[in-house]
Length: 207
Length: 182
Image (cartoon, rainbow over the protein chains, first blue to last red):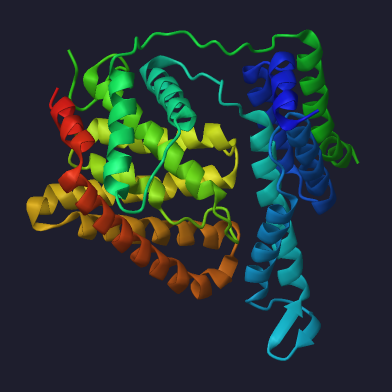
């Protein structure tokens, strides 16, 4: 099954509001959890869920970000020296803090990626403007933009003018045609996933 | 009747201009998102171009709404709403927006788009470095700060020159100016 089909299936199964609520619950569990292992488990779970719902999971990019954050933390040596290569020293506390920060950073990104869908509509006038902007954004993405080096500014201007004119002539209250899920199975899955994220914290609290 | 200071509705001409500028922010954010970088909040700042153009188009309320929509909408599109990335984006964008609008209000035509752009980019990066020192970098932020600020200066200059040239010749911009007046 390709990414688009996975995303389509996820749209049918999960309600965007239930998904966002579950994401918030998982994030709260993540931030209450002081240990690295459960945080790493949340990261892996969120990566798997993101992949299963048709989101991009750039493993190499994620690894680079983790290395970047750990590397930045190692710039200031703190704690016992674990290894040294010339002027570069790897210290225990700086390494542990770097890994914890990197895992938390990436876990938040993937939970958010899994929980937030573009069909999540916010209420009020502000929400209406965001919905209108998202529709306009989709229109820009649909447009085949051809920019030539010799006439870059003119080409860009023509594209903007065409889309802007079209947007002005459109009825603003057109309802969204995107079908979204309201199924009990999807919601039950989300409740279980959110509850699972709290288990390590609750076990620790009871002990 | 539209209050000049509040967010215009999506059915009004200024509301549609706001939605269009927001969509441009989303598009440019998506372009920027695809450019590989060592840290997710390290940005070139091209998504601030619509904000830079909007300084002379929108009154303060809708301008601030554009900055907020840019952050919120992009967080919805990329799914980063619940992450630190959204926090960095919010702090950087709001700071840049306030600095850019404040500069235009204070100095009017005496400051060019290049000046506004550089001030916006550098202030945005400075706030992001400050936040990063609490969230991910710790004391190493002092070492990374000069690189971040230099990057802000370079991208601010490039974006400012582009905005200056584009706004001078664009038919769309002329039309948007007309719509912005209501």
